[in-house]
Length: 278
Image 1 (cartoon, rainbow, N blue to C red):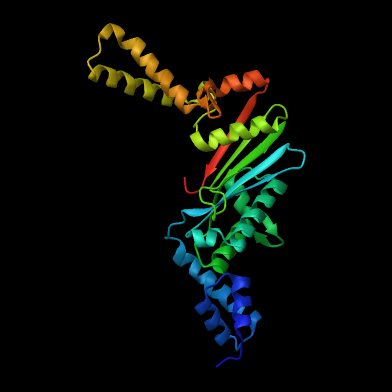
Image 2 (image 1 turned 60 degrees about the horizontal axis):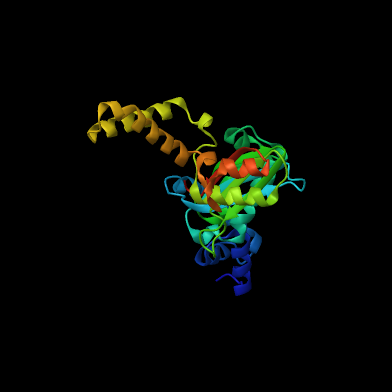
């Protein structure tokens, strides 16, 4: 039997994120040598990546990074299979490293991000594959956002106190107003608007809503003469619900988000909301 201690097993678990029994087997194979066991686990883990491809990764975390001058920010979602891994320091370190890489390189899209070099001779895709191996779960990077503008602010929301943030919201205002930015971002986290304004709703989406409203109104037997007014009211209701600027503000529901911004003399230029798994 190989000569190693409980401290060696603990160290190997901390280095690789592998389970206790896997660490013991690796130490047995490496005759108690921790470095050799790390290599053995990485080799086995890399082979296991393909086996994990069909498994579901619906847990994870959203991480953020905002520049000191508040003119740029990053949101990034990294997914895994279990909340146990999601709340681990190693998983979160991987996510934060990826967010820092996005901030430093400003990739055009996900494809460019995965193909970019995060370390000498190592792409982001290879880095994520390595995380698959070390953490023993399917790890997926498939979404990020980056803003550069006048004033960028981020709000992170935990759905459970013992888990990392599961929802991240990033907003850009045309001028600095930290308190308002936080309030608007909290509103977005809670109410999940799909669009910023009416103008941002695709024409085909509006037509589909109008069609449903008309068919529903006819099915209810409303008078033909009243049809246009009722349909228009229902479409306006859709705009109020689906667009951020049209929604009643969470901190003062007597005012719309648009009115709150107007009273503050601030323009909300854009926003993004990322929720793990959705």
